[in-house]
Image (cartoon, rainbow, N blue to C red; front, side):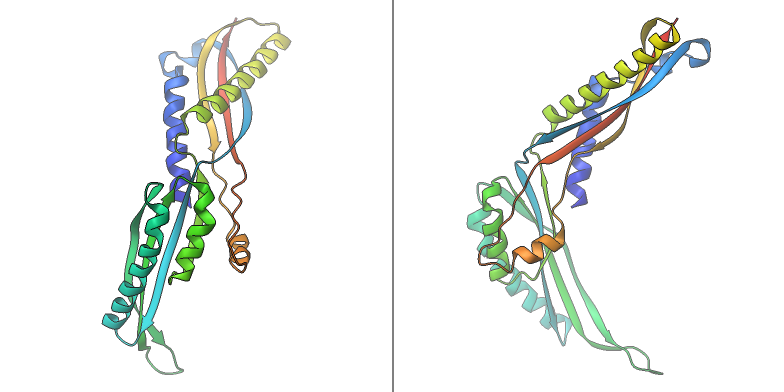
Length: 237
């Protein structure tokens, strides 16, 4: 689930801009002496939100029949999820399409053999203990495609601030060590730039497929590894 990853990464970067503003533009580095070094930090934290992409795919001889069958099956899936999602999250349609299916034969033009309708819903759940129950309800009521599942955070600000601060602290310590080794004195910070933030670990689909073979789907969220790297530039004399 890339969407959740991108939102959390943007939040971390926006937070970084507040915590560690870039200052190099205020000075011409060609006129000052400086040392530059990087630092990395990783923090493990428990997720408190899960996003699951659930789909219903149906096939029929005509587009109208495929769409009608899909509507019935999708309604049954959504009805089965209401009691689980209500008060704990939300669900919204993220994709719907009806496409022809072709048959191919040697030396013959493609022939339409039927139609396929697909309806995809993104479910956001803030109670992780209900994840397995939700997957079971979806598959039991007609969902035939779970394309992704991602664990994330409802509020990423505290952990983003912590990991960026730790990475920046390490980067400055490394730069100061270089300055000391060179026999120069640090007089200020010219810039601090984030190089990487990787906050979310999705569950591999292979594990999910194996899990669904059991009576009750077991889903273990584990920990999120929030990693950041920062490069700082210090002015020296």
